[in-house]
Each structure stands twice: as structure tokens, then as C-alpha cells.
Length: 146
Image (cartoon, rainbow, N blue to C red; front, side):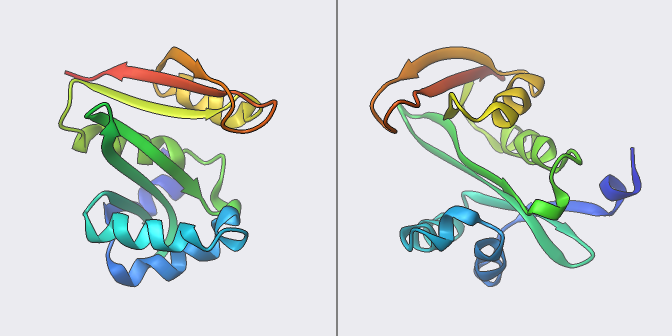
């Protein structure tokens, strides 16, 4: 394990973490609803953060709104910390917290780094949802965890 992993911890997010999470979430700068969603996710204890040297560098949101199964809505890592295994550790943390037999996640077909991460984390293709984003289908994956 690299020094980066040794110094990174994952813990439940607190309301004080939300502003830090929004600073590295590129989508949040274009859609104000992201901040509201993150605040609600933290309040409902659905969010975990990756912290390194006291700084929030990533987060994952796990809900049960996908046919009552665990669903990873978001996994976001600050740009300077990407491709260091942080996202995979966040996925594993969400999996460990998941209370259902199956865990789902999705990403756009065009998002090759996300697709590689999801497969590397042991998820299997489960289906396709058309018409969410024009000309970019949403690929759904699942993992049996119990």
C-alpha cells in the first residue's frame, strides 16, 4: 500500500464536510441542487468521506432508492487525488455499509474511467437506461454482497 493509502481514512460525513465536498465536485459548480442533495445525504447518514491530513478529498453516497436495494449515487474524488485508489476504497466502504443483498451503481457509457473502476471493484453489467443523457446511455452494474 502506498503512503497515500496509509494516510487516508474513510468516515461518515458531517455537515461541516459539505462545503469541502462541493469545492472539488465539478458538477456542483454548474448545478446548485448538488449542494442540497449532499446536505440531505449527510443529514440522512448516507455519505462517507475520504480524509487525508485532515482534508476531505473524496466522498461516496449510498442510498436505498433503487428498488429498495443499495445504490451508489455518487463517488467523487478531488482531481489531485484521482487514480490513487481512493474511489475504490470509497466503493468498498459503501459496500461494507450496504444492508441489502445486492448493490447497484451506474455511469454514463462515455465515462471510461468510471466503467473501469466499477468493473475492477467487482461489479457486473446489469442493464442500460436510455434517454437520461442524450446520446450517452447510462450503464447499470450490480454486485451481490451477501
